[in-house]
Length: 364
Image (cartoon, rainbow, N blue to C red):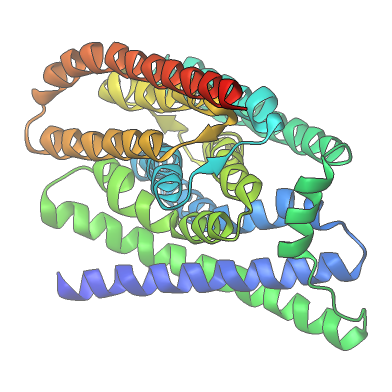
């Protein structure tokens, strides 16, 4: 068991190192060819930080381990919003750009609902995968076109983060290409180690691959997003912090799940309990971003704590379900109570925020 854990940790380290080399080489190469920092951030960096999820999920799909891949995608999406945005806004309250409120958050909700609908027949086959992958291409084209009309504030944030230019020489081009190739190689190697060790850990603990995917693998492969979002928030680059989490979720569903469904030998089987609980939780997480983003156009510390409370609660239920499958009925009852309570809490926060605004206006 110790050797398996060490292999898992080694796989994770190699994955993160590979993602870092891939992002570094690709972003420098793109900058040298005159591609704008905003486009680099929205595409190359977004895909690079999601590359651990991509590598692990595709490897699991090729191996026919659909549960592990599905758990990785669903778990990462829940983790990205509830934990990453939660912990980031607790550290530094995050200001939300108008585009995220009007376009990206609704897009995430729509993509989450579509994935749920496609999976409702009990699985995702190659046709479903093609639909998701085509929508990813549409989303990327739309994001690139939209980047041209971004505000100067947003463009400045991305320029400060991703405008590290270097001379366009043959030597630099070759070195950056080598970084990319080494990064891709490490991603393949790391994903092999992590997937193999995750399956062994699941067997040793007597739990399903889905549970391991929703918890350990999802959290581990999302670590690059944690670092990117927290560091960006501390620098005051809130658009990068939130855009990274939301964009990664959209890419996970359309790209990772889409490609996984295409390359998986028998498609991805979606168990009934996933349709009854985990996917609805993913949709609810996407839904709850709308009122949170809309209130004051920011995520306050109070809302950050609320998101973290959600994630802790979800993890508790995952553990309970792994120990006793009959716990699913209790989860449903809890959700039926907790969801309305959450929206009541958001209404209270909105009212308090409006009252504070009125007081500030009266004071001036």
